[in-house]
Length: 230
Image (cartoon, rainbow, N blue to C red; front, side):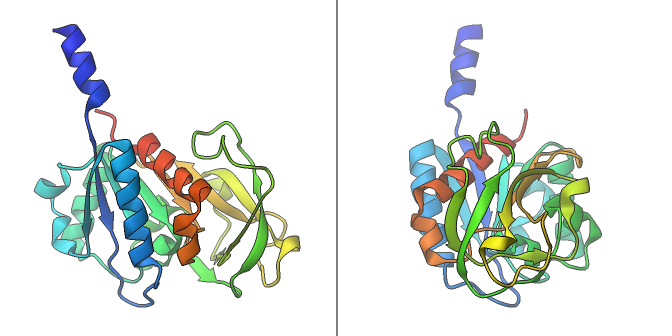
């Protein structure tokens, strides 16, 4: 019985909810992002559901998931009851992954701001920049080149999140034009201060990001790493 239980635990599918609702700017990379997430699900044996229906955020329905991914979301996308269900999901051990404009979401909900780590403020034009890996031992960064040069939309944030998150990577503002955060510009991080694990990357604006094997591997590893601890 113990052996069978162990096998079941090792082979159990990770249940992932991918939320792509927008109330504001809508990225034209969402279809490419969805397709790439489907490919990851097939590779990783995830059970995955895509939705833009906020009604999924109920106590009953969220019990079906291990990880919730806010993929290119924008604006005020949950009402107070839905926010309560989502908060309970995280605080009971559920995992959260935020991609790019997940930080351009729910500005009036302080708890969500803490979950993501920082809110989007501004960005310059899409351009090449150098990403510096700060923690090369984490599962979501251990395979990345350091430095990592890539093209993206480099978010500046309303505040530097370093004091409340564990920074995984920064973007070097000396390697592109328009950065406003200075020498310390976090771009990827994690934390577990709210009960469940949360991971965020500010990268992922472009369609090309979702055919970038290394970028998609960061998201795959993040989903596996944050998933609910049963």
